[in-house]
Image (cartoon, rainbow, N blue to C red; front, side, top):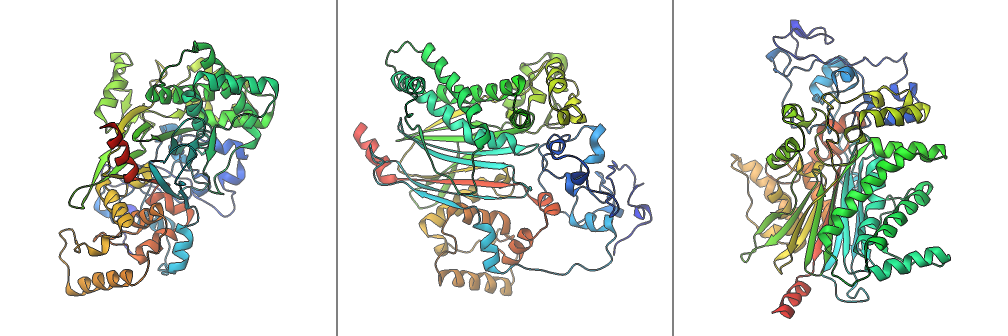
Length: 574
């Protein structure tokens, strides 16, 4: 067991130049935070993205200068969506490695190895998978979408990601989207079940909107707008359905009033932008107005104070629009003439790595805030995405925040986080839900689209993602030469790789879902780019308090295009 004089007491590290973060010790005689506090209070707890209150324990030494006496083995780790304010640092668990975790708890025994069997691994990976194959005729015309596969692998408990897919019944096209929540799952849940309705309404012609409004007025059955494609685990909030419907109806009534009734082509890009902005505005307004029902009142506040990013694709014939708010991504898989695969990015991350986004933020605020609006690669030093739904702590004025908190339920008023104002908060709003819309005209060589939350892109390069999906869909990966990525490989290792390939060739794919196949690689790939069952087993068997230290929630939708239909569209226009 490694030891060093300066680190004998894990409560205080006196290494040269460390940054110390104190973590409360978990005692068997004391209740956990999750047991001591009422459930509503937890949902608003300060700047903790991963619902980790019940997992904060142990005292650790966290040295940013990585002095030799307390340097753990390097393990790539993702960053939390939120960084806590210093006032709440004692409640935030840094993503220390397993070595630090065990050292801080002074475990003397050697951990026993435990591996999941292949059936157990498959059971975990396939628990949330969903596939949909588009019928040859959708009632109007042949679709350019063959179908899609989707899946989710949680790291947070409960998972904060959401996904949605639906066919637009009153217009042509299909909607698909992934939603990455932070500070809880309330906002991502609300956006996942509401946004597509706002988009569909924005795309409806004036006559159809009038028909729907007249049906509501007369009490007749409404025209169905969307056909949802949902996994049984994907759910809708029945308690809030009436509230959500009333907000949506107000929106389409305004669209009717704004539209003169003249037939005009609807701009899909404008419709997507308007839908995103209007939903975010309704989320904010519902929280300000409140609701007589105490449950609904608290629900709308949870939705508004948490946040969510969104990446949505609208496919209509050969017209593909991607609307992105935040740091999830859309990637197009293109098959070149020689059979190789290339990745075309159809979205931009809205974070500190995007220089244009940083410049946009600085231009929207006074020059004297140039150094504080983006600090330590985060919005106001706290939030990683620079665009998101909800997150009213970064949008409302200080007076409005105080007024809502004081008039809100006791759990909200008593919580310290809701009273906390971000540092250097002078000229809100600092955050927007307005999406960046990208248009792409589909070609026969465009074979599929991958929509995924940042949990995937943190673990895999975009080219690897497209190659793995492309080879899976075409069944060509067994014919490619083995690539070892520049590593020196022994004969034994090469024999193992060849044996593994032969085992795969002798059986059908164990994954019948492209998203599942991609998650298997994202979690289980070794240094040679092959899935290592031992590594996969270890990652999937991590307990809840450790899983989020190694990866984020992963949500993936793989949309497969019909090349023959896309080619036919092109021939018709020539």
